[in-house]
Each structure stands twice: as structure tokens, then as C-alpha cells.
Length: 334
Image (cartoon, rainbow, N blue to C red; front, side):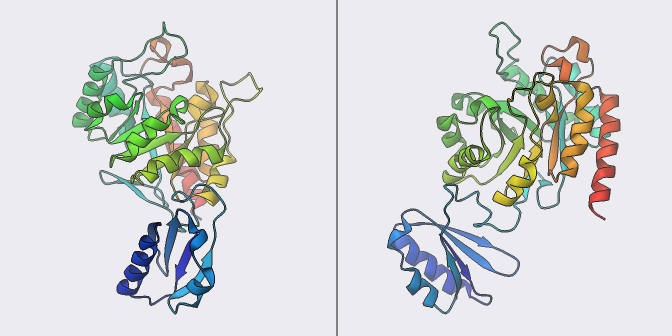
């Protein structure tokens, strides 16, 4: 349920109303907009007398929300959320590109790629220290050593770091990481999501390869229910019957999620297509569809990459891509 307050409602009046709701055993979420405030109520609202609520002088309207996701629902929070990552903002018109290799392989590799992508306009560095792989025989990442190398690259370039977590038991290793990524395979690892909800870290939540948008938002809800509202959603392709690409990038998810949620939405065309030659056109398409950012795999030697070389582009290709994305963004702003 949401209660929209009339313009001019004082802070004392709002707080008194919120306290009344809390005394009824409801969780209260307040969203301060530019022109009006909205109080979102989570819990058993069957005992709330809507007629009584609407009769209050400070109430403009009252609505029940049928969707099971509440905190992430745009009805609770009409204005776009802007996530601040150490001064780098994403959402609400702020567009960012996260770039770097699939896996951290060596100090030289990650620092060189970090310098290259920063020079081309990337504002965050991605790199896998823990890698979920389909085959147990594939490279699984450098783990703690990989995180140390990412932090070295951050010190060298100033780029905030985004890297994937596999297990809540490893949270201590992520203390200095700026953005914790939850990969597609862990989107419904609810124990992990609950643990991340107790942190104040920015969480990049990827859509599972066979999950609906509703399920993605419910996973975000698990994190937000724990108190952490710093979430970025990522469309990374879903599994369809098509075999020419690794997955199918669901571009319609971007505007659809824009209607449903206030959270920032980015796209990962690298994992979606699995083919480096398709990364640029799908990046441009995602930007045109209204994404708040992109996550791109960039490797300085894709042919010899230890992980996902086929979908990685070179720093030179990334430079061209970033320029074209900026051009698309300029057109969108007209």
C-alpha cells in the first residue's frame, strides 16, 4: 500500500503518521520526491482503514499495490534512484560504462586494461576474481589474489571496482570492493542475497539466464528487505532456442523494467551474445533502449584469455565503441 501526502505536509505530520503505521506492525518506507512525498507500507495492510486514511487532511490518495515486489517498485519511489559509487553516479540520467576482463589473470594484464579502458571513458573497472564456470576443469579465478590485484589497479587508476561474489563466507574479502556483483547463476541464491542486504555495498544484480523480470525484482527485494537499497539491475541475456548466440539479449527488458522499478538498469552485451563482433551493435542498441550503463568485457589479448576470450573486445575496439555510445547518448538527449 502507498499513501501519497499532500504538498505542504510538514515533517512533524509525516513522522507522526509513520509512527502510527509502525505501531500497527507495518514496515514504513518514505520516498521524498521533488513535489510530493510517498509513504510505502510493507506487511499485512488488511487492517488499515483506507476510508479513515483518506479522510486525513495530509493525505492526497491511497493505493494498494498488487505486485509482490514493494521496495523496488516504482509506485513506492516514482523518481529514479541514483546510486553513488565513490562519487561516480549511475541512474537518473547518469550513464556509466563498466569495462575490464572476464577474469583477473595477472598484475600486468589488469593494470594495463584498467589504464586502457579509463582512457577511453570507462568509469568503473570489472574483473573476475571468483569465476563460476560450467566445467570444473576451466579456470576458476585467482580468488583472494585476484581481489588484491584489482585493488592495485584501482590504486593505479582511481577506477572503482566491480567484481563477483560466489559465497557469503567470502564477504570479508570484499570489504574494499566498490560494487559486489551477483552473477546470473546466483540471482536466486537467497541466503547470499540476505547477507548482502545487511551490507551497505552497491550490489550489481544480474538477471538469471532463465528468469523473468518479476523474479529479478523479487531477488532485488530480498536485498532491499535487509536494508540495502544500493542496487543496480543488469540484463545479461536469457536462454532461448536460438543457437547462433550464447544467449539472447532481451532489449525489451530495459524499458519494461523502467516502468516497473526505480532502480538503475544496465546491459551486458558481452555475456548476452558471446561473440565479440556483436558487442558493439548490441551496446548501441541497449543505450538507445534507455539503459543507464553498460558492462563490457575488454581484454588486451582475447585470443589467449583464460576465460571468455571469444566475447571480449580489445582496448582499441572498446575505444571505438565508447565513442559511438556517447554519440547515441547525445542523440537521445535532443
